[in-house]
Length: 352
Ligand SMILES: CC(=O)N[C@H]1[C@@H](OP(=O)(O)OP(=O)(O)OC[C@H]2O[C@@H](n3ccc(=O)[nH]c3=O)[C@H](O)[C@@H]2O)O[C@H](CO)[C@@H](O)[C@@H]1O
Image 1: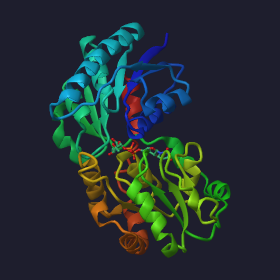
Image 2: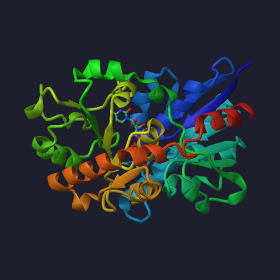
Image 3: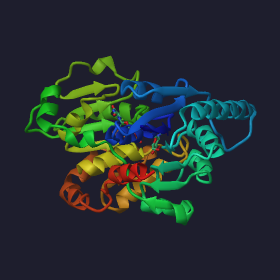
Image 4: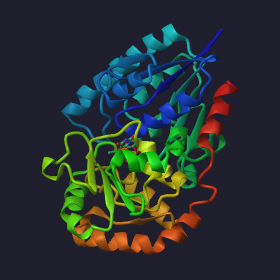
């Protein structure tokens, strides 16, 4: 008889794509895979696309301060715990695997109350609020960054790198160039503002286009952000979000401009693509991307440009610097930080 495993995590692609990466590698003759996410989060569409049974529960945003919305969200989280408990009692999983995000908290609390083992993975340099809460309920904790070990109990935590989907490494540069209608002899720059796009990066890259004529540009600009004024240009292709084409596009990419989302930057590291990281600011986030970016810069994998200093001029200048550091960066990107996190997690799961 198959054993059941429940995955959870959501709110942004960053909390879902690693789960999909692991699910892809699990032997589904051995494991019955199920997913618990929020009723309407981005995870619903991404998980249904890979045909894994999806259970939507009530979910509320967790805040560090108290206000009326917070109280309402408290009730939603409470309802989420009851929803999750009901689903888990029915599925009777051997374990729960969580990638974090608000929706994961009620699932983990419910799992703990039913004595179901919980594994969690933290992608960022510093833990998000969900994983901070989840850590006390977790049986075992994995992190992408070595630096993150300081934030969790030593006896149950291991740094293993980021579980990046293996498919992302299997793209063909020729196919990418062909899909894009680009010229194989000229450099390709990919601009990726995280799974949700990035308004300021989008505007700045478009303003800098006249100074970027050496490059052929793939711009992944996020939902609703394609600018029709720039449609049908030979050297500048815009997409809201790409799925199956992404491995081919990245295989054809020479440089990348990116947010500091952990999944993206570990994917670029595995592909050895020199990156210019423009992290979300402290006003837009809890500042995790700044720390992710700093860590990569210190290790020589990336350059960083803070959004406060972002303009067409600084972007072009940083890109020129990136070009001059390209060989050195690629050399450094062969390090141990490219661990086989997926392999480690699959082994851990199979041992349960
Ligand atoms: C706004 C926000 O809260 N961002 C957080 C979110 O990142 P967010 O989900 O925005 O970004 P990540 O870089 O972590 O992940 C994006 C994922 O989407 C994929 N992708 C992207 C564009 C596209 O067209 N196609 C595609 O498949 C990327 O390859 C990657 O696997 O979770 C990360 C991991 O906890 C955090 O580091 C980020 O701070």
